[in-house]
Length: 124
Image 1 (cartoon, helix red, strand yellow):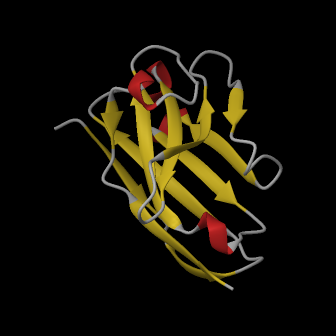
Image 2 (cartoon, rainbow, N blue to C red):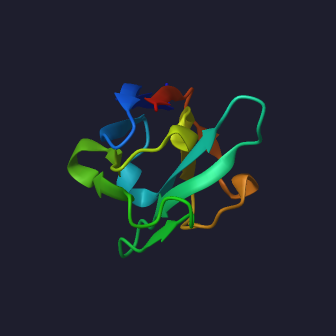
């Protein structure tokens, strides 16, 4: 069964770091653009970062640029989100998303498949 599975979430103090992973099964991850979104309680799901399948180009939300880094290991069919200098406002459920083309924009509708999410909680 084709699916995206996130892992690596947890509780961390403000200023700390976490690395999220998204393992893609069924389809070769290197053939598709990948992204991370997040949804805080009571808020809409928002774009965090995306990475192109072709050339590794990346796109980041302004709120995380310089603190978060998206990367991919095509041999492992896995995408990562390294999160540094975490703030309480980064607390959310983080979702991995996959585009069957090479879209790396911020519009949720541009992504065809989604994972179940992993909780990240940053304590102040």
